[in-house]
Length: 129
Image (cartoon, rainbow, N blue to C red):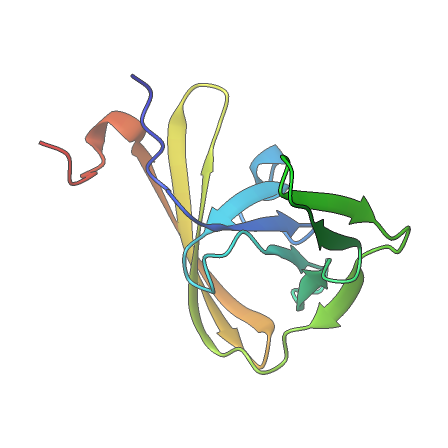
C-alpha cells in the first residue's frame, strides 16, 4: 500500500527558486485552504491564486449522472494573494522518493525567506500505527 503523506492539499506551481532545481515546479502545501486550489509563484516570489471558478458550469439531472459538467470555454484567472502573510510549508518528492520540504516566510503575498529541509519519506511520522 502506497501512502500519500499529504492528503488534501493545495497545488503549488513555482517559477521561483525554492530548492534550485526541477523540484520547484510541482509542490504541495497544507498552509492555505486545502481545497485543491492552484497557487502560482512567479520568478520574483509573488504568490497568485489561479481562479478556475468560471471555467465549468454544472447542471443537475434526474437521471445518472445527476450532475453534468459543462465547459464554458473560459480560461482561469490569475489573482494576486497580497493579503497572505505568514509561513507556508511546501513539500515535494523527487524521483528517488526523497521527501523535501521548505518553510517559506511570506509577507503581503511575497516571499521573504526560505528555510529548506530534507528527509527520507521513510523517516516521516505519518501518524499511522
